[in-house]
Length: 500
Ligand code: ADP
Ligand code: LRH
Image 1 (cartoon, rainbow, N blue to C red):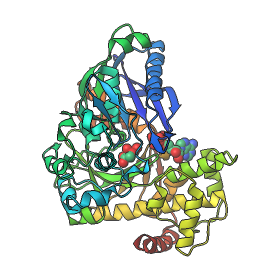
Image 2: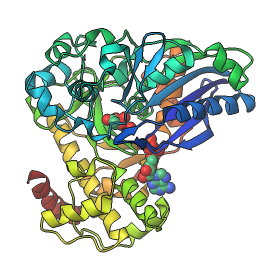
Image 3: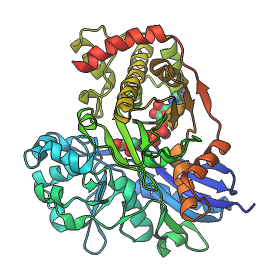
Image 4: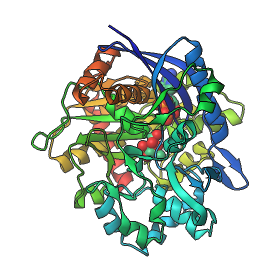
């Protein structure tokens, strides 16, 4: 069968990559063309995206793909949610986009609630309250008296900024727009009420487009620079990386209908752990509000009912702290050290707000243990073990609440993303949750991005068909739950910790 080539440009918080997908109508082959680090840059007191360098790396990925003799049918860009750029008159990029871990949003949740009740924001958006949601970043700009909002014509989410730089087109892809807390998922439109309550300029929010639709074609200057013979279509995949990752869950179950609640969940495991279920429409009620669950936009009309859990950021930032002190340890080394450390030492609430920002993570974990009357972890391995066991217990906490919200039993956990390579965490997740874990694929985000391009090009007919292609093309490792008694005991301690 004829093979079609698609390029995914996927910017994760740890690394960006250009991934080439070769689709023969039955299976997808995936090739890593180019990988590059993606760290923020601090200038004065602000944490920024390294935008020009990242755009240059993206062009390098396209150039390398063309040089690999691939004939690219389409290109799609995805990145993490919530961050944005502002565009002014004459295609001017206004300032350098700011990274969501910048502390400019401190205090902004309360500032917003003083103008519009917290309950009302949730009722409209169904989105979890995270201090860095786009709406609070905008409020921070306004509160600081930034001139940017006065001259902005268009707000573009970061994958849309990158799409604009490639094509010149301005649009808001729907999945990433759903992370702003400015979108009403029931009407599918930007919320006038929130914009006016917070005095944010509604006019800068652009037209919405569906994941899988065409954004435009590569600008002539890009085509020439990367050495392509002709221009290429740029498709808006699910531009929110988590939305693309959820597309690529290798489940045989169809998207659930209203009468058949989901019996599987996904855990998109990378810098963050995004754990949730796919539902046919938003679930916004007293229970989802109390537990701060989110309803983000999925593909083909689905909703991602999920929770953000701090994730492997805890490990990444600990590793960086030790490396700065001259102790450079690889992930496999760290996991081996954690595995040989004693089980069930101190536990943390992974979602304690003190862990959110950049900086010395081991010191913050030790401080948390002290504050909660626990001994500090005694070694690097012990500290990583504390992080992994605590994450697994937070997964259990989340699944139990999802079961209650959806009145269902979750039978299987699908772990996708870079964290699916962490066999220790996969085993802990199975043990803590008492359910089998199916781990893989590792590059779920790029795969979801690519196959939604193929779906947009009418080479795939449905989400169910798409997931069968993923299941046929990539291996999955199954972890069966073990040791239930010991994990139940640890869970008792964990419940106390997250209550306090
Ligand atoms: P993001 O898209 O947020 O950058 P990824 O999905 O690429 O994240 O996942 C990166 C994470 O995967 C790393 O932070 C690390 O914790 C984990 N990881 C990557 N390789 C390994 C490995 N060999 N062993 C264990 N964990 C790994
Ligand atoms: C994961 C992710 C997550 C968002 C966070 C900012 O990469 O996109 O879904 O909440 O980054």
